[in-house]
Image 1 (tube, one colour):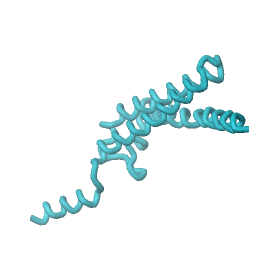
Image 2: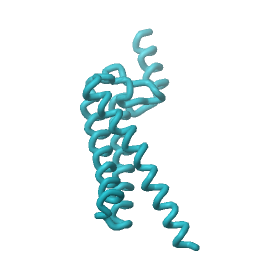
Image 3: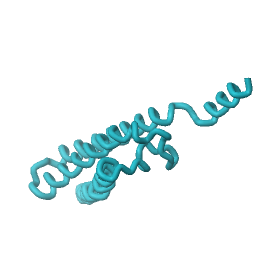
Image 4: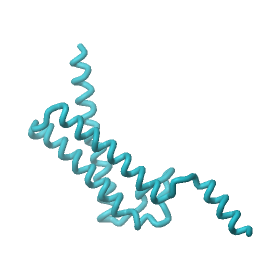
Length: 128
């Protein structure tokens, strides 16, 4: 019973990689070919003022993560070339690294603090 549950969860995780890799490769496509920077370094759904500056980095993050996940899918579903532990480790590390890299880029593009503190400092400086 226990091994059947794990097997079922592995298939769910593997099949969930398909839409995730599609979204990441679609973002890379929009950034590189369509020059659409509306999804670059989003913070609360809003890109930074200079999104074009951070677009190459966002493209690289999304493209590499999408390609790695497609490689995992092809090697597991197409060629059965990876063991269960290997593809789970590769996919898991790729997911987390993409999340952390996108977070770091977003923080770099928008700043590390909340916008309220910066707005208050700007208001103080303008009133002097």
